[in-house]
Length: 336
Image (cartoon, rainbow, N blue to C red; front, side):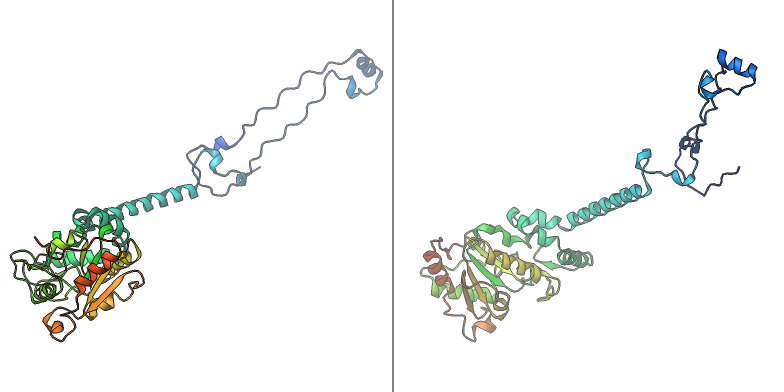
């Protein structure tokens, strides 16, 4: 009789491993006839079964050789095709995740190195978003092409020197100064040794008329305010040399919106100073029921000379409100 097998791809086990060997039939023990059966044979009578010395052997069933019953599953100790596929998928997913983390680590190396730790921890989820990583890639591309970007990379996040939990006053600017050596990561502020721009001069003029005994510094570095809890935040954090607002479309505004939202929703009440239409639009969602929101014209000559900047008294108003809340006031003259 021929046994037909359908094609089956087997593991390294020999196919003989899947059959139960057929043992040769055991030889029947010789029959012994009782005395009575001898007499019956002599007398011509047929022998009865109970006259035999042992029962007749039963026929042993042959083992099944149905090829459909031969399947490779986990009970055989071998991985199934599905197990192998799942394992390969996990390996591929782990590899992709590791590559993503490595690329992300490289792209956020500047933030990790120059942001204050409390800011980095708070905004790491935001910086992991695709728009921010694309923003960083765009900056890298410009730098590789020889473009000059302000402020210098180590100063982009200088505003985070103001501890996140200690922010009392937020001043929102538009974008960094685009002249050489001016921008250093704080809105309206310039490095020592650099001539203060017109907007900053007008800020100092307003301070002199608003704050008794205000002493105008010999420089334009506002870092002394930062150490007291004044956040000097530009809406855009970088700019190309000589091209005002040139990085407007990169995505910085999304990031700084997230910062403002965080400040609005977390921590104690704060003072927000919104100077000019741009800043007022950016801060439109700030909760006025929780914070003091002060608005005025922009201090640039174009805005200030139209009226609405000089005499706004934002600095004294801020201190009055902070004092009422039991929050230490700002020493606006502290600009060492």
